[in-house]
Image (cartoon, rainbow, N blue to C red; front, side, top):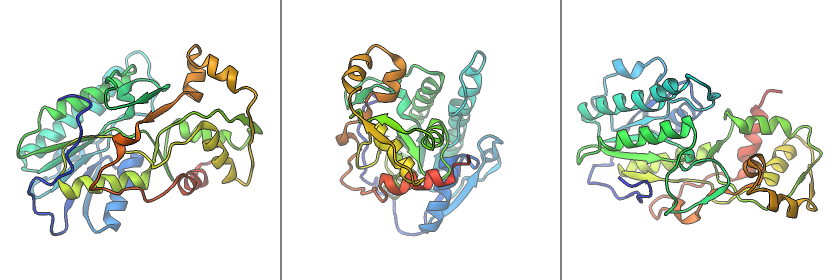
Length: 303
């Protein structure tokens, strides 16, 4: 299955009436715990189990409508010997849980992958952009996608989601470090780059669309608007009652250096999906904007 396959949001005939039962794998993770809480509040019958402790192995999946695999290894420094850890969390455990779901007659399996399957930051991603991971994390996520998509059948719909950076209260990773840094930065270049992000509530809303329609395919959800690095830092500072002054005189130099300096490419390069990749006629999933999302995130960051 090609990596640029468009997902089919149409129902495959499954009866969507009634309270849907969803098993979320990834109890300790930001996405898993947030998704379980949100779905529960929306009226789904939710079961949340640990991926790390492999609680899904003893869970009876009979009668479950959808399994969502949010577990995995992400915010861990890549070093020699860590490849096996990434493969175990992002590939083998996911594949084994998908096999169990299939044998148990579960109609749908959703795998949370990552934008990282396209490689490092510094590019605009379109429908024709090749999948080319360049990190252990990205490669393990891509391998997880491929292995699980091989299990798809008429009876088992497989959906793969490749979200960009996820924000909101309790998020992890480099965005939390940026939130801490916003407390001290007095000024910053207002370089007009475009970055894709998605608020955790918007992601949960999108996942519910896939569940309700028993969808299959590969999806690229994101917030309704792009955001620049300066705008992101500015909103973080604003949530602290601070202001980061924009400076523009460095922008021509930054534009010249982005293709030449990896660090600047990571900070100021574009890192976004084309809008068309994230718009689905049967799913309006944009509930929150950046301001509320980033305020919640900053309020949750410990100094």
